[in-house]
Image 1: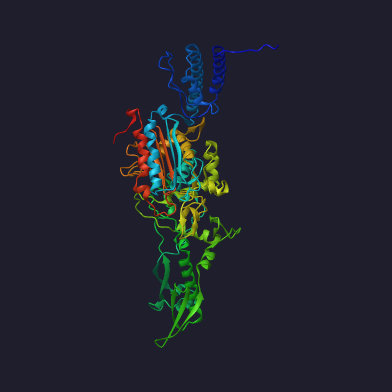
Image 2: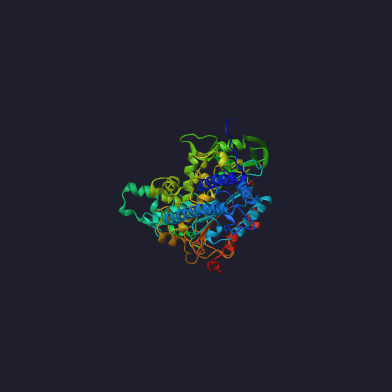
Length: 624
C-alpha cells in the first residue's frame, strides 16, 4: 500500500512563509512608481518597522494579500522578524540605489522625479493646485492645462488637466502640444540670440542693418514735399543750342540780355531720420526700439476691403484714361458687392450702372490660394490658406518702411523680436526652426517642441486654439495663432513655437543650471546672467520679462527671476534664488480670444503662489 504524507498546520505555515519571503524580496527589487503600501503589526508585536514599506512595490505584488497575512492571525513572531528584516534590507538597498541615481542625475544636471519633501516642499500644499486648475476649467477659463514644477533639480509636480476643447472628447496628456505664443520670445528667439552673442557672431550694439543685405527703402507711402530750385545761368557761356533749350523752358525768365533765371520744381518725399536698420539690436531685445508695435499686415487681414480699394483704384485709372472730358464719381455698394458709376452732365445724373461685381472668395483668391503652388503661393498660413508670393515680397518692403520713433521709451512690441529673428537667420544661413532644433531642442531631449507641428505630429496630439471667424475663417488647430507669425509661415521671432510644459521645464532647468544639462554646456553662465538682469530704465531684461508689482506671477516671486507670458494662456518663470522652474500652459483663447477669465480669476498667479506657500525651508523665501 502506497504511503501517504500528511502535514500539520504547524509544519505548513513556516514553509509558506519561507516561500513568501523569497517571493517578496525578489518582487521588491524591481523598480516601479506605484502607490504607497502600508502594513501594520499586531499590537503585541515588538517588531519595529516603517509604516510605509515601499513607494515602488511591483505591480504584480498584491499588497492587500500581504496585509492579510500580517493581520489575520499569523502569530509567529520569529518568522515575522525574519520577514521584516529581509524586507527592510531590500528596501534600504533599493533606497541606496535610488539615492545614487539622484546624485548622478544632479551631477549631470538632469531633472528627476521625487517626492515634494525631497525638494523642500510640502506635497499637501502642492495638491491644492489641482482644485485651483479644475475650478478654472469648470468656470470656462480654459478647456485644459498642463502644470510643471521643479525645485532643486527635482520634478515635484507634473500634471495634465481637462480636455483639448469643451466637447471633452480628448483628455489633455503631458505630451500634447500647446501653442505657447509669446513664450517663443524667450524659449526660442532670445535663446538663439544668447548663443550667437557669446559666439561673437551677433553684436548687440550693432545696428540691425549690419545683418541685412537688402536695406533699400522705397517710401511710397510718405506725403510729397515740393522743392523749388532756382539757378541763374550766364547765357554768354553757353552754346547756341544750349541757350535755345534753356530759353524754351517754361519755368525760365530773362533777368537781362545775358542772364537767365531758371527754376526747377521737384516733387520729393522726405526720408525719415530714423528707420529700422539704424536701431541697435540691444534696443530690440529690451523693447526700447521705438518701432511700430505690429507687422504691417492689416491689408491682408482685411483682404476683402483691401481688394475693394484695389478695384476702385484700377477702375478710376481706366475711367480717367477713357473719359478725359467727363466727370465721374464712384460709389462702392458694399451690400450689393458692386461698383456703381455715376456720370454727371450739365448738373444732373443721367444714369447709374454697375461696372463690375465683387465677392469675398474673389478677394481671397487675389491674395491667397487654397492650396500650395510652387513659386506662386508657398507661405502656409493654414493647411488651406497660402499667401501668394508677390504679397509676401510686398510685406517685406512694407516692413522696411515702418515708423521708428526718435525717442525710445519702453514699448512692448512683437516686431522687435521678428526683426531680431530675421537678422539671426542671415547670420546662421538657416531658418530659426532648424537652428534651434539642432543647437537646443534635440540635444536637450525636448521631443515635443517645434514650429509648424503638423509636419511632425498628428493633429490629435496638438491642442486647438481659436475658432477664427474673421480672417482665416476656420478653427486654428496645429498652425500658429498669432497673425504676424502666421503671415511669416509659422516661424517668427515673436511666436510660432509649440511645446509641452515638461519640455519647457527642461529648458528652464538648463538655464537654472547655468547653461548646462546632462553634462553638456549649451550657454555660458555669464551669458544667462547678462541677458536676465534688469536693464537700465526698464523693467525688462534682454528678451526676458522680469517681476513687477502688478505682474502676472506669484507675489513671492524673487526679483532675480525671469520668464515670459503667452497670449494663448501660458507662463514660464525661472527663479534662480529659490531654484524653481514653473510652467503653466493652457488654451484660454478657445473658442474665442475674447475669453479673459484666466486673467480675471488670476489662475496663473494663484497656481504659481502655491509653490512658494509650499516651501518648507522658509529661509529661502523673499519678502518684498
